[in-house]
Each structure stands twice: as C-alpha cells, then as structure tokens.
Amino acid sequence: MIFVRSVGGSIIRDETTKVADRKDLEFMQGLEILGMKRTVACVITFLKDQNERSSKDIETATGLRQPEVSIAMQTLRERNWLTEHEIKSERKGRPLKIYALRATIDEIINYCEAEKIRELAQTSEAIQRLRELSSA
Image 1 (cartoon, helix red, strand yellow):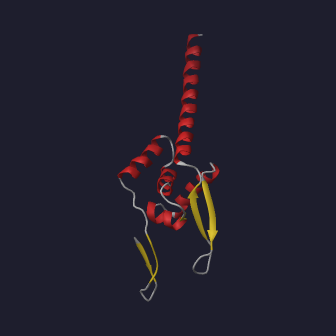
Image 2: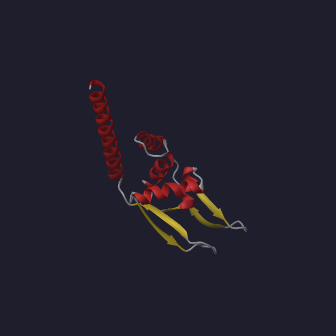
Image 3: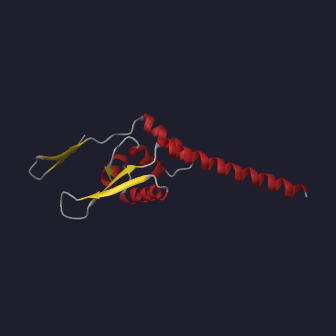
C-alpha cells in the first residue's frame, strides 16, 4: 500500500501497488526465454493483473527507470498491445499518461510462439542450405 502525504501530513491519495510474487517472476522469465526484452516482459507482467496504471505506477512497481518504461511502452504500442490515455494531473504540469494492456495474455503468448516457430523455420532452412552447399 502506498500512501501519498501532503506537506501537512494528511493522506491525499492511497493506493495499493501489486508486488511481484514467485509466479510473476516465473512468468516474466518465461517471456524473456521466448526472446522478449526484460523491460517489456516486466511491464507486461505488471500490467496483466491491472486495469489501468500510470507510467509512474509502473516505474514504482517494477523498479524500472522512466526511460526504460518509455522504451517498453513504445514496443507495446508498435505491437498494438497497449491502450493509453491522458488524465489531467492533480497538480499543474503535464497530464498523466494511463496505460492498460489491449492484448490478452494468450495473444501475447501466441505472438511469441509464432516468432519462435518462424525463427526455427529460418534456422532449419539455413542448415539445409549449408548441407546442400557443402556436398556440391
């Protein structure tokens, strides 16, 4: 649970931030084994159990720095796995970006599987071609 306090000490916002458990860490490692970058796997693992979260929430919960979160979000945007919108900040300044996964976890896993199958086919073709060239 995170409590955000004002200068006077009163609570102005409280929210619960999920902490990764053993199952989450295993899930993240599985995505990494399938070739996903660590930062992207980390963000997906966090967002999979969330409705919507701000980039600051993602930074806090995952331990990633702001540039790492931004780069991971760019990857998710490129794959059309992310929804985002802005809300007005409670203070003056830039609006707060709010993110959620658009893709289901099954869709993400299917994407990873298809990529690995494609890579395997390319590897097999290269090996076959090398055998053909070596016997010629």
